[in-house]
Image 1 (cartoon, helix red, strand yellow):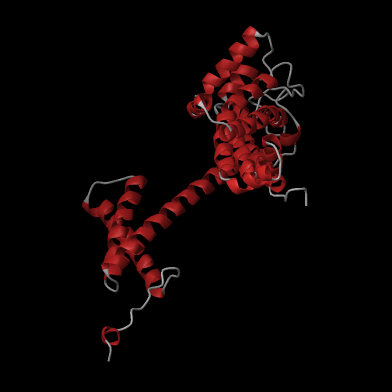
Image 2 (image 1 turned 60 degrees about the vertical axis):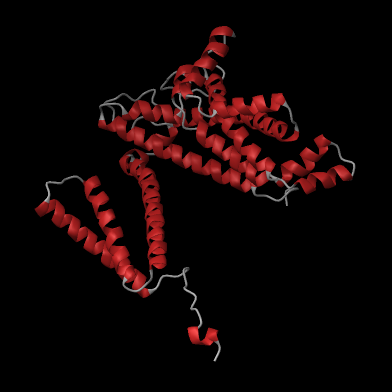
Amino acid sequence: MSATNMIGTEVRRATNSARRTDITAVLGSLTAAAALTGLLFDQIAPFSGVVGFVAIAYAVFLALYALMVSLDDDSLAVRDKLASAVVHSLALIALGALVFIVIYPIYMGVEALGHLNFFTEDMADAGTLDPLELGGVLHAAVGTLEQITIALVITVPLGLTCAIFLNETRGMFTRLVRTVVEAMTALPSIVAGLFVYASLILVLGFQRSGFAAGCAISVMMLPIMIRAADVVVRLVPSSLKEASYALGAGQLRTVWHVVLPTARSGLTTSVLLATARGIGETSPVLITAGFTPFLNWNPFADSQVSLPLATFQLVTSSEETMKQRGFGAAAVLMALVLVLFVLARLIGGRAHGGR
């Protein structure tokens, strides 16, 4: 008999599936942790508060779970399952926070969302004491769409061009541009609004308008767009570009026909990240476009409000109906962002050539 047979064959431990004992250990530890923490809060210590209860219960759960796992497995398995429990619990917390962020505005604004006029009227004829049958957020939705469109028209060409420049050229100026882009990612939004207000409105004489707001939003979107696109373009295999050069194509033709189509999906993601950064801005819009309850279809003249700014103004009101309109405007903003993201994914996910 060989030494291997005497020692015995090592049994591989499955880590990709949950056993019945694992489920029992998790449920038992959760129940015991809740009971012990409740006993601690109610009978032993003068503790109170939901946050403290959850924090202590979580620590007790991890300790009890480690103890129960150690009855059947070795120390390596205990550490592995503890790490798995921590990771899964953090994922559940993040998912719960996301669900709460989405559900809470809808729940608080459901009465306003139930009226058709909320989507087809502005607030020109609705006061703070008027019922929900009057007024809506059409003016804010139009302002958001026009301002983000202007911002995208400015940001996408500049962002792509700068990302290509950072990847296709070398030198001191390239390092300077990269440093400026990285510094701009931490630029406060109020500074972007003041910059556009000083340059476009005070110096060049433009009106406070949706166009000025779109320019301010583009200042916030541009560094996000450049950094994300820079990373994506850098991932394009150099062998593809070398093959294009070997066939006689120039640098511009290689970038247009090889680099950009190859990185299309990632570039779409960079546009989405930049849009998510800019579509929720309030202070640049307030400084450069002002606030108005009227519907303004012309982004180049007069004040124009956006959904985030309208949400802020409405929820800070002391009247319950105005708060409901504010939460409804937040729900409309989330729906609008979802629609834009889906359209961008559908467009960016198409194969090269439109097939």
